[in-house]
Amino acid sequence: MSELSVKHLLGIKYLTQADIHLIFETADHFKEVINRSIKKVPSLRDITIANLFFENSTRTRLSFELAEKRLSADVVNFSASSSSVKKGETLIDTVNNILSMKVDMVVMRHPNPGAGVFLSQHINASIINAGDGAHEHPTQALLDCYSIREKLGDVAGKKVVIVGDILHSRVALSNIFALQLLGAKVKVCGPKTLIPKYIEKLGVEVEGNLQEALEWCDVANMLRVQNERMDISYFPSIREYSQQYGVNKTLLDSLKNEIVIMHPGPINRGVEITSDVADSKQSIILHQVENGVAIRMAVIYLLASKIKHHES
Ligand code: CP
Image 1 (tube, rainbow, N blue to C red):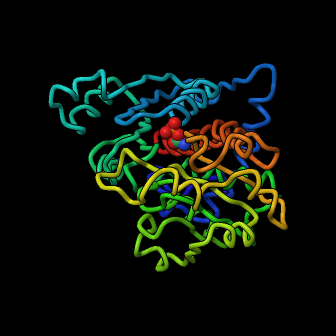
Image 2: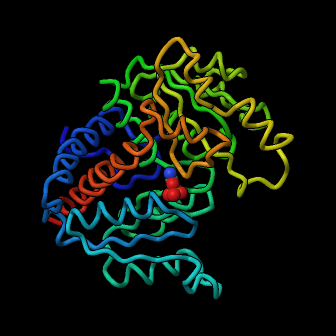
């Protein structure tokens, strides 16, 4: 297969296993490119991409922008805090104004679940979801699975536990879909109040005890507590949360297997993981960030190929 089955990347749930393998193989090529002295290829000189960020971001935004520039695309950046959205303009009006400037592809982060799907039904450009509320963050899940494949050789058959605030996490949902599609076994672990009631319907087991979860797994993906999405208190205190669901070096060293530690960032050091765990040789957190550029280059390149194919 040399083409994605989709025109947009709205969520992992719309992808096939073959799509993910194609993205990984394309990312392997781009990873080699970004490690050369000249890190750029001319592939997308005729493509213009708008990055629309209606919510804060460091990694995803910079990673998309770097990926686009490494592919030689023209790039425009939009941030809600400094735009006319503040004057009451709707999402569709904002995006249609941007598209009138002949934009081919839109990368969008938005606080509302389904914002990318909504946009894809109303505008004629390829949409990449860079995180929509607590729904999906597909490129994060792709780079997470790619990093597991790089570290452990394959995703199939691996045991992955996702720890922390599953309820408010788009990273958790996209990871569950991607890991299962690639043949991994997935458990979640966290306070009962932060585990969604539907989770077992997704084929995911719940483990309440962190030590048991870590003894079971090959990989632990530690999530941040999403305070910005909480309007009530879901656990008694941060101190109690980190005592029960945080990983420190003593706990890590007590496990019988040398597990891999992942985190999508931003990290709250001392809450979900201590600094010595984040910076330990078992942590692949910065490899995840590095792989994010190659994965996003692959996604953009493959979606742009579909636009070009459609036009010719
Ligand atoms: N992992 C992630 O989405 O980080 P940012 O919010 O900084 O983009």
